[in-house]
Image (cartoon, rainbow, N blue to C red; front, top):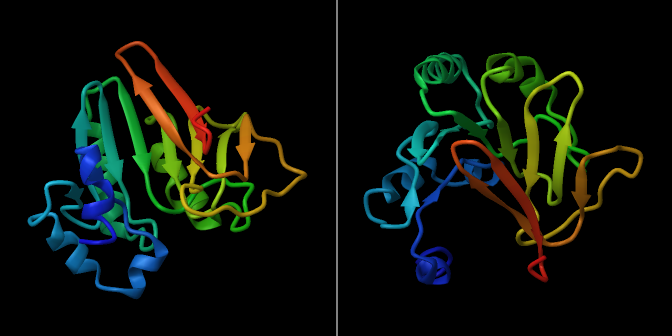
Length: 187
């Protein structure tokens, strides 16, 4: 309660959580069950989907991207009818931060979502990045700098990159998506 409910109660918005690597050091089932006790916390299972407005969201457990989850994602994407699709998980597919690219996700996840989703959102690296690859239609967003920061690899090019505190904010309507990377000064 002191680390989640109290700090965020005034925002009065739901948090649709994805499991991260540190969560695997604790009790994952407790986090899933907490969904039934909290008005703010939403994590009905290890991976799940939800919709808001014109967007379908697909939340992954990238710590254990197993065969049942892959099959679920393929089916969920096929059933999706909203014009915008966002997949997110803790680990980035592409990143110029300390952890770098995930070769496993490039091999296992990217072929499933390529040509079917608009954005892949992640954290893990404590940086802010917007990456667009010539070989992909997906915009890759790393937003892991809300509480601490790490250095970026200087020899890499991104549409946007910062090793300062901040977060990603998106406004999506039927016809357009506006992404803003917000820094600690609010700009």
